[in-house]
Length: 111
Image (cartoon, rainbow, N blue to C red; front, side, top):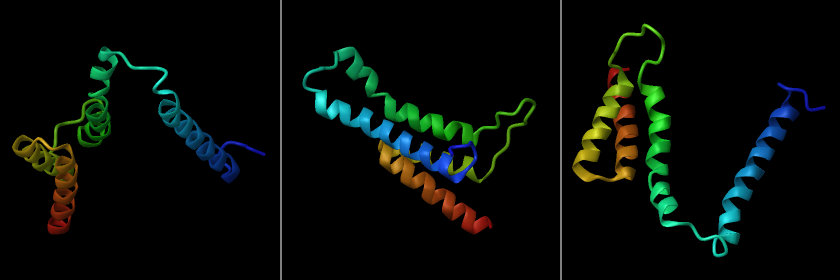
């Protein structure tokens, strides 16, 4: 019934992962008062959003194949715009917005 590659299998995986995500996220809201976080864990969790953003962006922008030469493409130009915006504003939201807008504008201009 749930053979890999079938629609039923993919739907079951999506439902299962959704449930896992809901349970883990709701668990802290339900039991967070009973399980307080230490100061060390709180400090470490501050770095989770930037680490996740870096983990998504860096593999997309940099060449990771063996022997691949460095290159500049549309994505790299958008990243440079986003870095400049960050250096000016220190806003994570503006970094994401400016990077995407820069990518769309550069792509539209260069075709």
